[in-house]
Image (cartoon, rainbow, N blue to C red; front, side, top):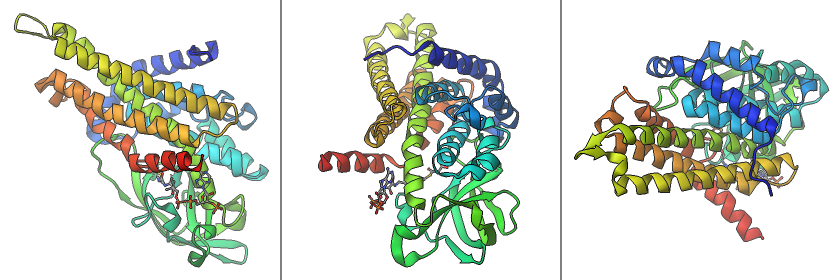
Length: 380
Ligand code: CAA
């Protein structure tokens, strides 16, 4: 067992850290306040190879491993959780799906430009009545000749209005439950596909979250991914990887919260001394640092298992559960330590506090992660 990152992984960490500090940091507060998508920043991340970091080079990716992916997302999220989720979704929920399930033509046409970051992707699974239970989705895909016709509405789609390509899940037969669900590649601009609502959010406000509507949207049959009826498996496979990404986003927010609170506590004087000298504050820091390390190790374990081609579903769920809990707690403690200054926008911790919550919700709520973990325990 080796707890050190490799030289290559350290290089990714340094590159992502410098980019986040030198580029994302300049505009993050403003973009958050204006709910503005990081268009220029995403272009620059594409140039750095971040948009398809674990996709092999033959498909225009960076050919790196999943540990590098986790390390990169953490560094981005330390500064900008919104930019981190844009990148995470493109990597895990779009490129990873195409790498595993697309045929050669689909890889050529879609994976290559998505992995290079020339195009951006989204993943449209959730619906108003199908969030934690995607097997209950009702968006339909009727087959007519050489086409599928999509009808229905998708909710909470990250990169929804900015994506060039969306992986859409719909059923060809509701009667047969999840065995009717299929995954389709849908291009922006396809007639019948529109962005019906842009969500206003508590946090990650510089990311783009939308409701998408499909009304008699004709998709060529060649845009079906893999096979009919395999859509739910495709989605759940992708979400296992996605959870490593969201766990990494969460740990970035947690670490940034701790770092900001530490720096503040060393400077802030009350009752004649720095508040870092009070044991009550020190114990908070010790607890947070320990929990953050524990969560990060869970993330690295899940990522290393995936890199080794082993099962990692439970480990990814554990990592996301733990990392999102500590993100919420660390950002809450950071606001507490900064006091009034934690509640105003002069310091970033109020943003960390707002950004942290989503990590307990998307790509499977904490309750879903517990369900995944418990099911496997009971099966053993
Ligand atoms: N990988 C691959 N296949 C899987 C799987 C996995 N991790 N887990 C289950 N499956 C398969 C099963 O084998 C089964 O297939 P067969 O019948 O052919 O064997 C099928 O999927 C259904 O399995 P279950 O009956 O076990 O499924 P379930 O209905 O009980 O649900 C669940 C399981 C764990 C609750 C799952 O539905 C789940 O993870 N739900 C949460 C969904 C989620 O994360 N939603 C977030 C959406 S995206 C988002 O957040 C927005 C964004 O843009 C970031």
